[in-house]
Length: 521
Figure 1 (cartoon, rainbow, N blue to C red):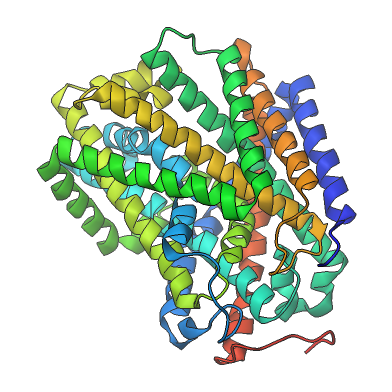
Figure 2 (figure 1 turned 90 degrees about the vertical axis):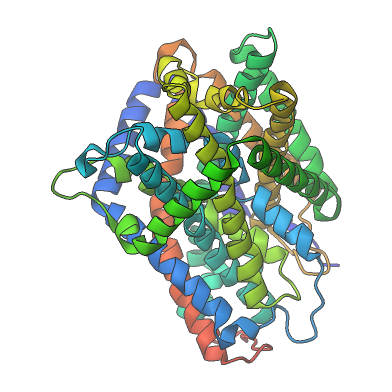
């Protein structure tokens, strides 16, 4: 067994930076927020087109790698045996990927596009054209696009680690392009960038989950929705994912993901049957057809002359956040892929989760638009009239269905499990990235390192939600902006990583046992 040691070149800078960022965000919230806002605006104005183009192209790169002759490449070589069952792999990919987003935005985002489509397109709100646009928009933003980011990063790490026998680090994926520098100082810088990106994104995602669970509890009980409840929930989530991460992949995250995926399927089938089934199928098929027929136009519409902010506020913002997540989520998905082919990786981590996400928005988004249209905009009024309207829209929507309270409580459990599953996977991956000696036979990083990063992320989430009280610009805004800013360097890294991976896979020409030696090739 290899001795596990700390990678101080990644561990120490990130520990100092993350703790310092939160402190500065609380001590000087307005100045810090204004600076980050300026950076976000600069990034989106100058690189928004690149976000849109890269995400669009990555979809087809992933499909090519999966369904060409290179799809037969097996991670670990011809004799490698899978360590994770297909169902478990799919469940972890679904609930540890964008499952949290499906629960938070499954009704709120389709309703927003339905009632507030981009003015420059001339679409009448609450019309059939608006419903078609809304469904097409969420197909673009929530299906193939985010998972293509995760999948290309996952393929890169899996091929580098299992086939090229390189260390289990994000930076190892650059070896085919830059040689031994990827394993030295350059690699350390790359891993630091990825750590910073995922920390910012994770703190924002955890804060989002706390706020939604809190709003649901307040909706169904007399408990007040406020800082006390937020802190308790953040602490509970933190303890849960630390314990789960501490127990390791074989016990913790498999249990969480397996049960959570089953809850997702139950909720999907219940709303499909109890909701307006015919309308769901009609608007879902119509919107998806519109998206597929105009796929390039949807992805690359940036409104450079009329200056609509829709692309910046929705797809580009979300792709920046997912881009920040992608290197480390891909690293975690790669860990599950030993003994599987590249084609199976694409199917289990791209096509099946994307298909599930598409049907989720058909069902929840389509039902929400139907009920809002028939009620004269009641659900939309909830989003607009209350500061916590986005979080409450899901629970208000459930009021249109039978057994609404029971289903609402199940959804609260699903939200809780989704966020703990995601946090578990990212905590484990952050721990792997900051330690040496993690191998296939002994992949778990030291438990004390998991606990450390779990506590740090929990602190960031608690400070994020509690510092946002009083109506001022405080830590929550600063940390969310940080997640978006972190997506910009992550985007450039993903571009370089993709080129390196394509070079490596194409040069292997089906040689599944290709191994890079210490000297540069």
